[in-house]
Amino acid sequence: MRLPQVLEEVLYRVDITSASGGFAISATQCESETINGDCGGSAYVYLCIDDFGEFFDGYFTFSGYCSEGVSYSGRVNFSGRSDVNTAEFLELSFSFDNLTVLSDGYSSTLAGTIDSDFSTLPVTITMDMLLSDNSTGKVYWIANYNISVTEGLDYTDVEISGRYYDPDYGYINIYTEEPLRFYLYDAWPSQGALVAEGEIGIEGSPTKARLTALSSTTYQVEVDINGDGAYDWSSGILTWSNL
Image (cartoon, rainbow, N blue to C red; front, side):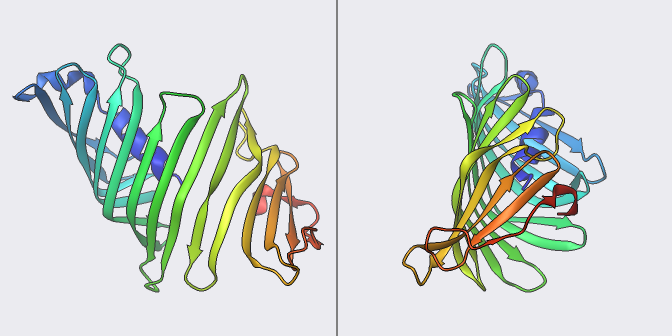
């Protein structure tokens, strides 16, 4: 899900250091700006920042704002903290209750929160979100979904944990058994393992599936069907490009 990146990208396109050139409300300076999407639509941004240039808040109003073929419509509130010397973001929080996303003809409506902390390493992102399928009315839930990002010299390590709810199949718990490592310029991880745990199997432990990155082009999936802790089935080697 690219939503955290899209929201951050829009905010980065606003020069928060220029807010002092707007109109004053006590010790707070405010400004507004319209940002055009790279494939259509726009985002109206209203931002207020304190007199020291550290704490800020405001909102976006997306009107079909398009990024990489995905369009967004609705309001998103935000708040955060920036470095007064570099204007880099240290903390960001987003909230929304009626954000419509259109991708490849598929329409969904999102409600939830996204919190990012860039002030320490690793960088962390936490999401709690309801996703409503606008064609079926079914509601999916991403609960306490945590992403930790560690930058190396020529790679990025990503760790994930959280819970996902499907109205037809129930809950699964998701976590990285080993961090997913993305090397510079690669679209897919070259190593790492992601596990999804489901209901308790007949052998007394959770049933689960494990996706293991073998290279930047290949991966495999293994499944523990009965909850005995051993993987009973393997997909063999598959290619990321066919996902």
